[in-house]
Amino acid sequence: MPTSFEDSTQSASPQQERQKSLNAPNPVIIQGGMGIAVSNWQLARKVSQKNQLGVVSGTAIDNVLVRHLQDGDLHGTYRRAMEHFPNQEIVAAVLNKYFIEGGKPSDQPYIMVPKITLEQKFDAQGLLALANFVEVWLAKDGHNGVIGINFLHKIQMTTAASVFGAMLAGVDYIIMGAGIPRELPKLIRKLAKMEEGSVPVDVIGGTQVLTSINPNVFTPQLKELKRPKFLAIISVDILGTYLARDEETRPDGFIIEHNSAGGHNAPPRGKYEFDPSGEPIYGPKDIADLEKIKKIGLPFWLAGSYGKPDRLKAALDLGAQGVQIGTLFALSNDSGFSQRTRDELHTGLRDGSLEIKTDVKASPTSFPIKVAFIDGHTSTEEGYKARPKLCDLGYLREPVLSKTGNIIYRCPSEPDAQFLKKGGDPEEIQGRKCLCNGLMANIGLPQVRKDGYVEASIVTLGSDIEGAKELLAQHSKGYGADQAIDWLLDQK
Image (cartoon, rainbow, N blue to C red):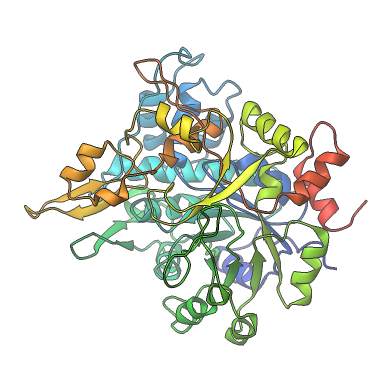
């Protein structure tokens, strides 16, 4: 079977680079973009160095950067990357506000990044662009492999500035799921030409509002940027047909995600029905027709339970370019999980106690999401009840047109009284978890509250953990991303 794809990043003019990227061979393995910095630059770099597509997560990456700075950036890694950002005034302002020499005391709360809004100020967009630049730059540093970045369509307000920052670092692929990313191809084309790019943001009870970024305000010295490929994550063929029918919305390829995949899943089509364990039931209408996908004529990858060598071969036999795999890499020693979280997961894998279920209420987005049930985590009833209910990161907030005609922001994971006062549905409250804070805790960057409460983790994984179990049985101290790739490709 194919085992790699050729490098597409040799030096050339920007125009040649752009065309070369579009014509480059496709990867066989795409490492999934997971959580908040679970698919961090270290993991993506390791995968890319094995001639596959390493992917970083762009979710909440501004908070990831500033928390590392507040922890002292002990090895100078993030500041080294920041030295290469083309607008050093932004770098100086960020360092002045957030960097703490030697790191903050462990019991001191992190300084918060201002919540993103529809009316985006220069400093907020600058920080978003810088943080995405840093993560991609570090992933690409020191090798000629190819790097992608993953975004959630549900987090619309950060998209324009985040895509710009990733493109400033020369990102090779942009991947987006958890929605219908119809606006991404046009945004990428605009930013590649250093033109103002916009993303329409849905407003509940009102009309869409454009969030825009003008590259020339930040980097007027640049004339053009390399255009990355764009892959849309979809679950059904009808969405692929819709996106591909117009040049304005057509991606460069699709990732066809089965509902067994980790993280957010598309809701079942039609009325919700549940199995005895309380998980939603998916039917034939929720499975993509690959023959119809093939007729679209764009390359595609399969995702969801493809994390074993025989499943990769099966995907290739079905006509896919390859597979996207998340859980296998998330459970490797190279992912961004803190050592404590990784140890908890590995223990559960080894003794068979790790339980992963699709929870239709956990995510504030209203999309079903797969979570691992681990003692003390907010995925469990005990962990959920122990956490004070609040929303202070706000990435999954939604803009709402209030009765007075003003735009306000609402999240079912905020205090109940606040949510209801903003016109929220009482049925949306029960069981909603704070993914933003829980996912930050997964990677060892939990917020510490003034009352002493330390944010607990909530881990999202896919249903298929058999590949990880097999590799853990072979490697007593855990396995690396490189070992996972060799195993998938049957390379001894």
